Image (tube, rainbow, N blue to C red; front, side, top):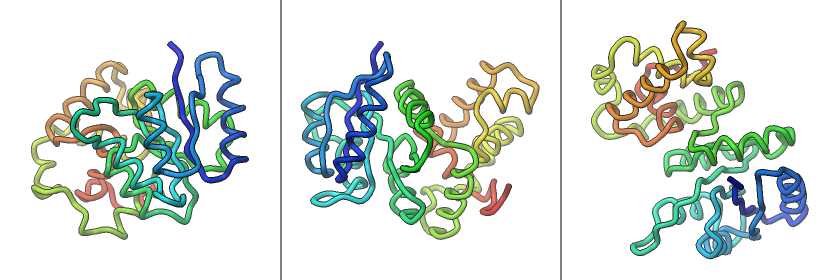
Length: 227
């Protein structure tokens, strides 16, 4: 199945470069683009993409506001694309809020081309994009800078509802490990890891892997600055 993508960025050269890279892939089709968040929302609701590549800082409507519009659509709008934020190191608050709003992850704009292609495929498949090395540091910074942003219900207390194995899996998710890496670390089948992750999300009332990472930091399960 072909992955339908739109690119929302205020720099025409960035849009053109990303479009050229993605359309060269047999399983990806760029079906639209926009120079700002407001237009990006309009294009998305017209062409119904699977994935929206969304820059953070743009005129008219920034990427965070546009992501919220797409991920919490008004009554009568049923289409909800996956949103992948494009960012740089200096927009940490924006990225953190984007993940909390429901974005499927983020990618540094200077990432290698192969990472962009992989990111689109990962997000389209329904997983959150949480690249190990950079994400661990950034999410840790977000949690430290925003101690009052914890979910209702007392995150630390909510951890008590998890089994020891589920807590272990959540910790490894927060450290940026993939399902395959978690399976190898815990000597489990990958399908068993997926089952544990599903139970963690259900017990904690979390939407996806991105929210699980944030919860792990906010609850104190993983401390900012941990390796």
